[in-house]
Length: 77
Length: 77
Length: 147
Length: 147
Image (cartoon, rainbow over all chains, first blue to last red; front, side, top):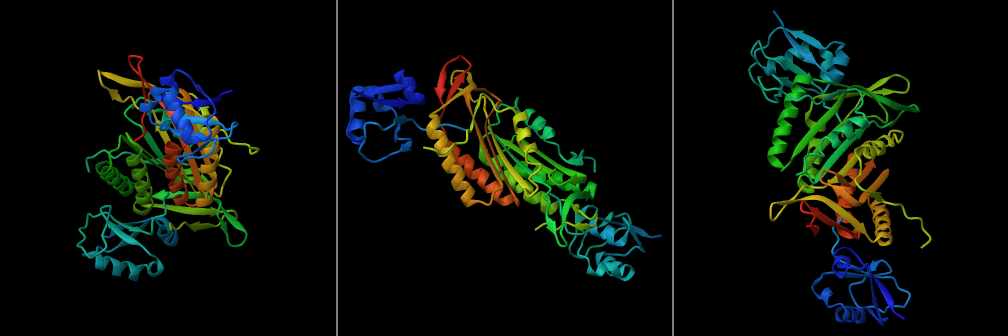
């Protein structure tokens, strides 16, 4: 079983996908590491991670049902 | 010969006229004095005097052709 | 005075469709990134004796107001990097809920438009010779005072 | 999440007539004395190689954007004495000269509406998960960066 991670804007563009898949990481630091290992194209992209629609800058545990999203810098307006 | 003085807003209302008439005063201080003598109702009204469409707070000579106006506090907007 | 002064006065209320036409007129000005708009609306302020304001009747010293508005326009264009600036003020009667002031500024980035719009509203209220007579629900009147 | 979130998104450009209808809808709110409006318009910015921006294609993380917009609304209503607050942002393609952001605040006296409108524009640009992809005159694209 994998977890699905939403991708938006320039990240979705670069990955040519609106969803990435990973083996479930235990926490956000694991997620960051796993993302960069499986998707080396992400290394040069700036993004924040949102868990259940809140941006989390530090480490935090990830439960399997969490909604995870990669958010490049916002450019609305 | 007299000069005509434009009146606006609450002053025109109070005087029931859009124009007042006075013997030509030599300067603005003379004008203020003459206005209060001829129109005692003005004493309790707050107004500025404009000469040729510019507000003049101090004394200044008045030439016979000047456009003189009494301006109560503005309340546009 | 040889200069042609732009009229700022509108008879009666400023209609919403006048505002949207004014906005639509800027769609070809593709250097504009931000518009700032201020609208003054007539409040049904309560008055002593169970009365309220039902309308405001605006009058002006037109020649002076247009000269002053011209001066304010020039100074604001010199101070802020603006593409466009429009000022409209009602004369005559505007009923409660009607719009009596429309200030509209546009610039490449948002900040000059926003700052200029705010400053224009302040200057219009304090420097233009315009007077508003409040008409109350019992037909009595009261001269408006700007605070 | 049981709360009903207000939608802020409009497909394509925000039309001037939508704005005037929104203004007209406030004429019965006779406690309002001032409206402040900000409009974001698509600029035809020049780009290297003799190209220019011809449109912006907006996308969003909708659930998060609506939650965040709700939070911003609540905080702004708590901070300023406002009668009304409306936020609209385009999704999808908006051509140069079109309007993609409409922020509209109303208050008894002008100051809260003006301050809240400015603050909302800043927060919408920095806190809502919305992305603008610039479409250039040669059909290439470029992700917009907010400064």
